[in-house]
Amino acid sequence: MHTDQKTLEKVFSHIDREELANLAMDVVNFPTPTGSEEEVARFIHDWLQKQGIETFLQHTEPGRANVVGVIPGEGTGPTLLFNGHMDTALSGGPEDLWITGSTRPEWQALARREDDVIYGSGIVNDKGPLTCTLAMAKALKESGVKLKGDVIVTGVAGEIGRSPVDHYQGPAYRGKGHGARYLVTHGVVGDYCIVVEPSQFRITWAQCGAVFIKITTYGEPMYGPFVDHPLSPKESKNAVVRMASIIPALEEWARRYEKEHRYEFGAGTVVPKVNIGSIFGGAPFKPNFSPAICNLYVEAFMAPEQRAIDVLREVREVLAATEIEAKSSLFLSVNGYESKGAEPLVAAMEEAHEYVRGRKVEPIRDAFTSTYADLTVFAEVGIPAIKCGPAPEAADAKPATSEMQKVEDLEAAARMYAFAALEIAGRERT
Image (cartoon, helix red, strand yellow):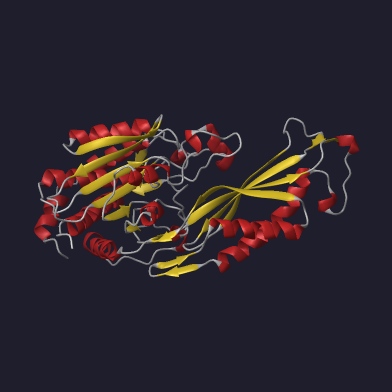
């Protein structure tokens, strides 16, 4: 440990647990589906300004902005970025019902607290962790500790996995790195980056990319009394029936895919999954006609070193084997990466975990390496990056839907980020 204990405790003394909890709840209370992040970005901007922290907004497109706060160092040490995102997987809007089928309080942009637990959309992914970096930045500023390098905190728009397709167009459907990519191509860069996504306080420096694939089957529009039901689906003139017969082949491929593309690295294993996310064909209000077209939408995660074109070719081989006429195309592709040169970050966060939480960090679960995170954007442009953030530690907890966070975990995360900032930006650049 480079930083002396007196300095650490001085900074920690400026992290107020209740202030952190209240700030996290304030941020959760802004509905921020992808494409609608500017209002909360302005709130964070104004809050940072009140703390005397240099801050500015990056408008990525109308209604959307990244927010950036800077604590300048002396200019002789490394610059450390902290990155979190402001859009949420669920926000309580009507579109959510197509995914969830129902609504629950923790999926709403309405924070509530029960004893030491905060509920609400984004408290885990990713507003709670993001708020921890804000509390950390305030503590660094108030403590008066002099750093060698800059510390930058960022809240970005458009991390959640969405992409424009068909009639779903516009800012609400631009995610998967939208804000982070704008960030690093418009001047906000550093020597290192800690992506504060939920990981149960565990550490990864590898993350999946992903492809979104649209598959289309064709049939013949036909009034119900003239429809036949051949034994072979490939002879059916109903596009939905044809698509339904393709699904088992896709599911079989999905089981092979995650085995064939497993990726081992120093922190654990990446297991890229395949998911059938949507199917649409025909007119719900006119089921007396067989449809001439049916679309199915698939996500396939990609381990580091995979290529999008190769995944598409695998899908096309699966479709060809069914002998059913089908068209397939990509409508989103982002690469996965194993970050290089992240060893100083890993060491700092491992020490931070042991100092703050009193025990060694545990190996990360496959589910937290096998997702997309903006870590890939920083790795792509050569900024060494890791992911580490608070999340419920139950084995069955899923960050996108288990939106509940212990206040004590938020406080621990803020302290760990402060520890890492002092360790990384507190040294001379080598």
